[in-house]
Image (cartoon, rainbow, N blue to C red; front, side):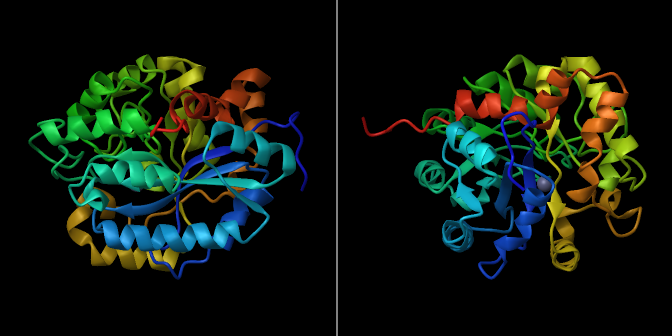
Length: 328
Ligand SMILES: [Zn+2]
């Protein structure tokens, strides 16, 4: 499928391949098939140290560079190029500070390798701050604050998903650029610790950031992966913070068997609120196809739909990815 600039940009701010160098990045082409121009792929979370994360990144980058259907995205301009030529631009994200091994200089190294967003804390407290499952919320630590300043310096966007309420608010206070929630639903629509409060959403929007509504059944509702459930969260977020601050971050795991294994092997990261509905269901890339028409039927103007589907996250990339020569 060859796209033109006339079609809206479709941008997924977070999806997941198996976290192993052996994973096949070709699975990402399911997003290209539905007309997407950009995906951010996770390359490490709390269980990963720097060695394992860098090994995964090296493999994913080598595979993507060798396939002309992909474009390794360093800048917003690269995404526009992919959009105009029918390719899929790919950048990477980290969920948790653990892949830094406590070494802030690795922020710049990861940025050079295409990582553009980083979550400080995955569900539970670490050196950077508190997670959304901690009962005692102490926000960002001094180390976490230094990490945000380094991210601002190199052009990596702070991401509040999985963090505690206060950690998310602290990100917005410390960061000099936009803060995003790459894959988070709205707690006022569905009560879950992983969903964000209205206060978090407002603070994110005030930085110029974007909330990526996610396609995870247990965050959308009672393991509900209907487009209607997705739209309930989109509608609420648009009403609360305005249409310029809402987007999509599916969290789609391409290999559900691998996801179930990862989930079982790291049970300490996932409390009962992740388990009460049985196996977690995910909205597939293909299920996003009717989203634009569904939003249009609800009266959303084309320009607003374009922003939600991708234009808003593109704006953040233009503002914050910062591919300038840092040595200069
Ligand atoms: Zn996540």
